[in-house]
Image (cartoon, rainbow, N blue to C red; front, side, top):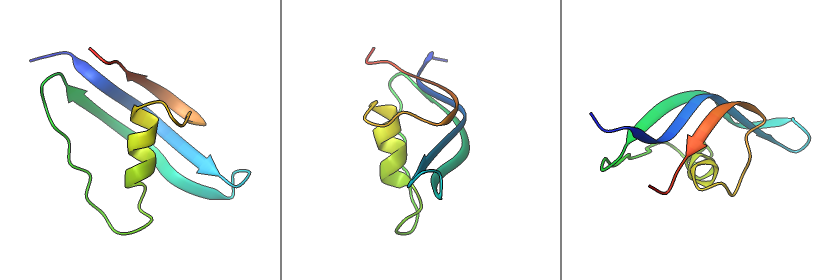
Amino acid sequence: MSSAVISFRHVTKRFDDGRVTAVDDVSLDVPAGEFLAAVGGSGSGKNTLLRLANRLFVPVGGEWHASGK
């Protein structure tokens, strides 16, 4: 099994001074060479999850690692 290039452990992201939770306690690993599909309704946090992975957003809680390797 390949090592994870994206790894989230209990990641949380909030907006609007903590009043809006976009991503809550997400844990996942995406191994090198694998694809991940995020499916959900409008406002479920799909884009926020992607922006966390490419470091456009910084989580308010949890541990994360995303490498370009």
